[in-house]
Image (cartoon, rainbow, N blue to C red; front, side, top):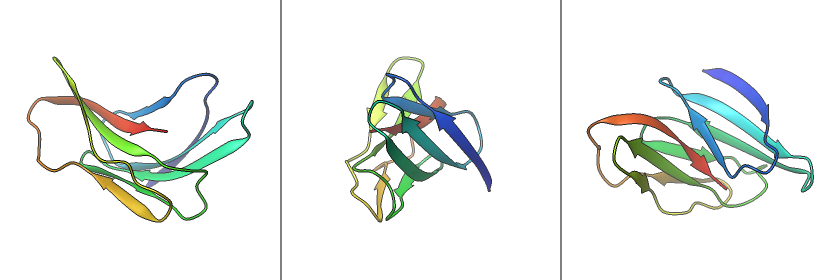
Length: 91
């Protein structure tokens, strides 16, 4: 599993390309850190994460959101969507 640390300024979405990875995102104004393990179908929100997250899949025509997940919980899609071109999590 590849770990990426990313600083996000003003953005509310973190997006992954093709493979599952762990993402940490911090917004300087809020000093909040999100520790998330991300795959095409789900996002696990670690206990040391700043708050709630939700997974999304993006197709060429829509964005499909999974339910919100608190700390130490998983936000997972309720189906396997065809034509996914990117995925990520929202906080």
